[in-house]
Image (cartoon, rainbow, N blue to C red; front, top):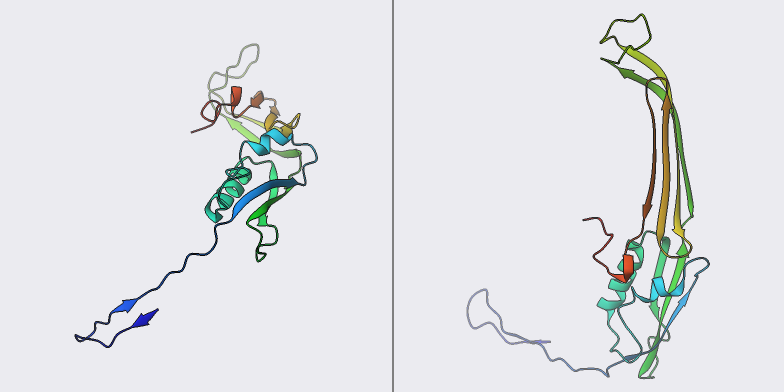
Length: 181
């Protein structure tokens, strides 16, 4: 960068000289740390393939996409030998899988007004109080495919409720189908 003396008050001409360096390309993409996740789940999120120009933006986009899957607790990307003179460099991706099971539980009270009183001596519309137990279990990365199955239950004398759900993002390998918006 160079600057010339000011020709007007509060103005200065600045000149930048840019010298392009050598372009670097991806030789191989090396993924490590997979234990239960199938490799194709990670491969479809990687934004650079062998032969592509090396791009910091695409590396960060790859890292973001892998975090967005929700099955990794840590994702690190790097270039192997970044200061070396070799034109083709390896892109390294190291992942750490998140815990596969999550358990939730709790106890409390539930209140209800206007409960039906069939077969009892209580008048219609009376208030009810009951202890309540909640339990839930979630399984991430089912069969190594980034699918999630969840079961949640709330049990009390006034109300019993259970919910079983299965989430399969990218159904038929389409990014739009199965994603919450």
